[in-house]
Length: 323
Image 1 (cartoon, rainbow, N blue to C red):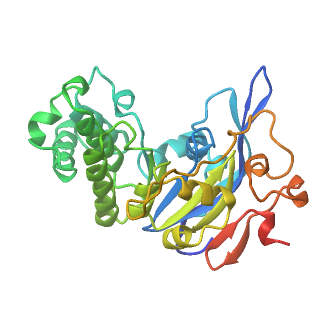
Image 2: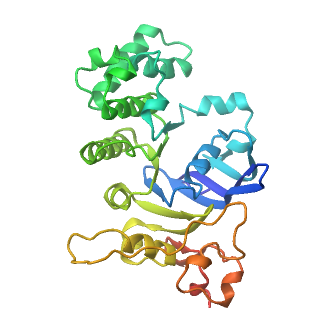
Image 3: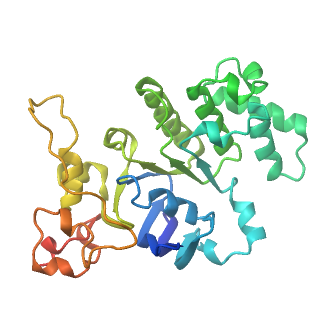
């Protein structure tokens, strides 16, 4: 691993064994997260983004199974760690912000208790009163108004934006080195979305944490990310720095995603769309998985392309760039 690399994923495969067949949700994903950066994972619903993120700390439930691969966190393979050792990393070194704060919070406990419990789970010396005081302080940092009162509130007494801030406060309670945010703005209105993303970026700067942000919102990607990995049908098809991806997208799928985004500076009568639909993950097409929908498909596409570097930091998996 390079000294600036915090997390390195190598050839990760996660399959779900069902009665209908084997769902190859994550099928050979390789990527890295550098220290202090925000890496965005982009792709359509069902492409494997969330499954991949949960597999990093072995949180895949049956019938899912991590088939192979390596997840090197500061050089240590998390897939080989004993469960007892891995639990010391979850919530402390690596934390999660889930897309539905309503389901992430237990309705029987106050907002402050969620954060205090997370602190106590990774500290053998802290007392509850100390953890509660720290929780109130974190609420203040994530811009929750009247933090002392809000800490005593139950989830049903909070708005969607407040709930998401509580989830973020829980995630940063132990100053993790990596924050995995799984579509954290999905259930929020546009104004609150902007506030939450600005909050995540500010916390990254304050705690010098890295962030893996999972989203399908390209506006969010352009606003906050340093690098982008585009996933399609369980694989990474393109990876680049954010400016490079928006100015010079290489993969036809990435080009299709960007062409489908409205541009307020141009008069467009009709937005383009990507023809066809996402493939059945049990019965995947032969070769390139995007080929049935690709306007540039040709005879080589019946073989699976590898992810190759076209320019510094810009990788793409497409036969158009290997002829």
